[in-house]
Length: 476
Image (spheres, rainbow, N blue to C red):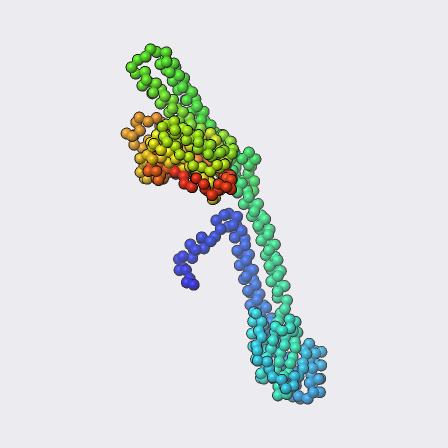
């Protein structure tokens, strides 16, 4: 396996660091604790445990060397019996002579090997004769055998004489303390992160035009300060929206009054040559006023509720049919979503009317996304618009090529209203080229839209693609 170059390591690590505040805060606590535990364990293991084990092994090797030398001075059974009794009483060593035997040929070593290496070095330094030992056969003892002319001198020693057997208790206590520390840290971090998550949820809900009535600042001082600033900002934005809506409503009302008088005078006046043209101008002025007011208010105060997506598409399709277009609908039966009905209906009607005004065929389709979101598309077979002008089409009052729109109703707010409604639901509207030859507008709403689709239709029957009509002129 090839190692990454040094300059790529920061990028490699950055991709694997948690992205959430909860994950990063936990990493800040857990990583130093784990590093500390590893360092302390290593220092203890290297500087204490191995040193103590080496001293114990050297002491045991010295006792065994004394026993071997004492036996070799007088290899009689009587001396062996006296030596074994003294070693048992004074050094807890069990000594026996296996006459005519030789050392085993197999080597038995423990899984870690530290004890074996330390004991081997100690015996090698103290004994001149061949030896063999086993630290694995008996859990509480060490089996050491030394080759003598008469046979094998076998010595069984307690394991604690060769190794520090209580080291695991230190590691265990260290692990328990670490777990307790991390548990307390996780509890406190979770409480602080929950306050930030609630603030984020409240901000997201406000962006969708919803309110969180029980939201109040809590958590750490800085989090409470941020929440208080958010509440003040929300109130200022809401006042601005209310003032704008009231202003547009007032202007709309003031303009409708003279328009109504003009309509009445035209209705009562005798027929004349320009009468029909004047009625058309009045209709266009009234339509423009309606668009201004729709764009200003956006139905932000309307509460969300479950809405049938096929019914919405059918309503928008009927509007496109009245404009003279041939309409095709494709949506799974039973597909529903939690939406603000009037606002979302306005967005679809704008897109469908826009497509019908620039094409002869209009297709409206919807499908539930695997992520739990919703996708709705409106497509047409019109001329479309260049790709580099897609974003320009969403600008309020943008009519793109004025020479192609001078005889059309509207002021260029159709796509702007549709995008404003979609973003108010947490989603967005994008434009693309339709396979029908014209333009397609795609409304995508995230999982927060609470998509509920029956299992029989989640396979995407009839609604696998979503494309919309002519964003060419966004003046629905």
